[in-house]
Image 1 (cartoon, rainbow, N blue to C red):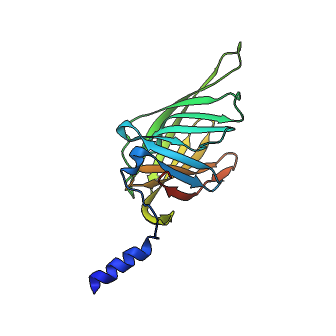
Image 2 (image 1 turned 30 degrees about the horizontal axis):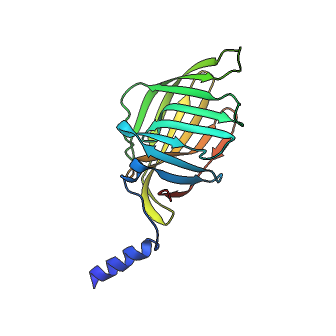
Image 3 (image 1 turned 60 degrees about the horizontal axis):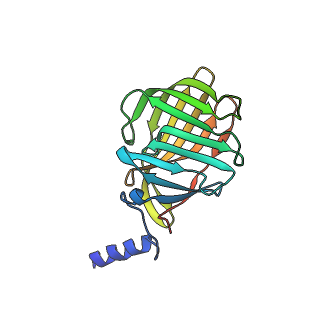
Length: 205
């Protein structure tokens, strides 16, 4: 009777037709939706570096990153505007080893970035550099439900402090999947606070 009760409880917790993700799902790619309604995709490459497209299918926006576990960005490509609008490619380098987040831990590091923005010839691309002290905080694990499936999730917050900037970024990290997705950006100097909570997480259809 006890086994039957456990089975019924398990079936009740997962809606019929829900296809829940596993760690292997990232090898072929997963899809997600954030609060702004945009659909994105994530796929795993070598050494747990994820290729994430936060503006999938949007002709007027490019927002792509390559990031270890989806959190430690190595390269980003941004364009806000229609084709022909200058895009910016940014390279990120950190000191120390980037390990998968563990709830309750923290990591401090130095970050150097180099950004290059396209220009219309004969003008040359514009380069900029910046350095930051960064503190990553891995908060208490939670259980969340997305697209009818329950997942363990560790909120990750990183505070960036530089000569001319001070901001915080937040990710939802799913340890069972090896997946981190950015959900919030707060600029402490301007007061801008952008929240993009996850609304769906699923396999491609």
